[in-house]
Amino acid sequence: MEKVLISACLLGFECKYCGGSNRLPEQQLAALGECFRLIPVCPETAGGLPTPRDPSERLGNKVVSNQGRDVTAQYQKGAETALWLARRYDCKAALLKEKSPSCGSGQIYDGSFTGTLVPGDGVAAQLLKEEGLIVFGESDTELLITVFQE
Image 1 (cartoon, rainbow, N blue to C red):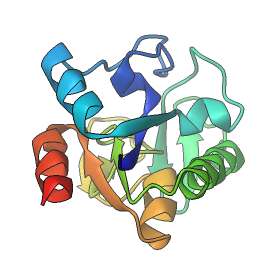
Image 2 (tube, rainbow, N blue to C red):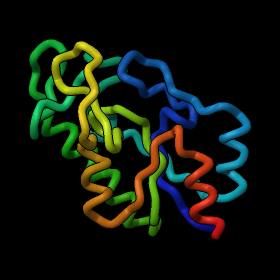
Image 3 (cartoon, rainbow, N blue to C red):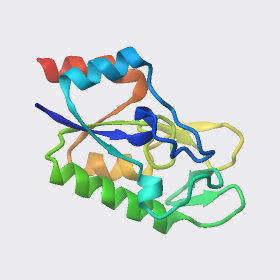
Image 4 (tube, one colour):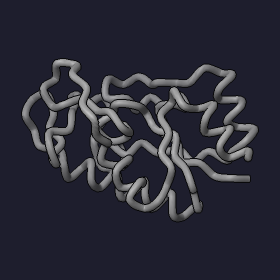
């Protein structure tokens, strides 16, 4: 069975910055579970950040909290942990939380904390892509299933 790295918050783990989760609908989770062995990771907590924590956004090559704290090192450490898991379990793809400073793929918040989106990737998504993984956002769950069933 193909293994897929997945943002832990999408599985219902309460590791979101505010202490909640971004749990996918039960139907999507069931479909994913039928097709893949899911390998959960929260790069932010894996990097040493607490839950709850201050919201953070990418600002160029850095990640900063809404309090102005540079948390780039924690995000980088978490990204490296995600990459280690992907290698360990031979994952070819990842299903990650969209717009996140660690997991966002293709579009992330701009660092102004105004809800403005810009093209770009979160720290973990970027590293996983550099390793050759295909990164999907949670709105592309059906596409992920389709791509790996062919």
